[in-house]
Length: 172
Image (cartoon, rainbow, N blue to C red; front, side, top):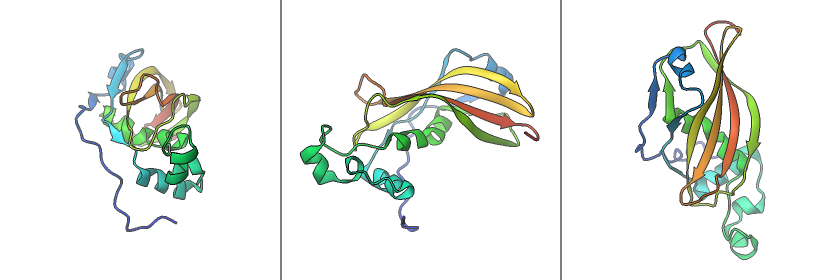
């Protein structure tokens, strides 16, 4: 079980400006474009260990530093793919802010998800957001983003996903 008194996970450096979008109508004009890029965030062993504790996924390629140095083709622990995915809300909110207020927002799903490159401990990642679509749904809007997770200094991304969010003005 995680320590409730553990320090908060490290915050990003805050170097990338957040793209401010006034409302859903302005957002619609950005379909097909890269709309924003998050700050860099370091993937530390502490973050990996805490994710392993939260998910009960303690596979050695993530948490056993000594064994990874001896046996892993990566030479060091790597982040869980789902840890990278779980950082989307945090990183995406740094990249783009829709200033229109909604009653609630929900993760609706993932259309596509791939992890083409592992993220080694100590690496820095950031999200690139391309707007795929904005559609009206009952009670609100459905927004689909292509999210590409870049690893600093690497050509191949850590993750490419098409994620779907819904924002509701009233009852869903």
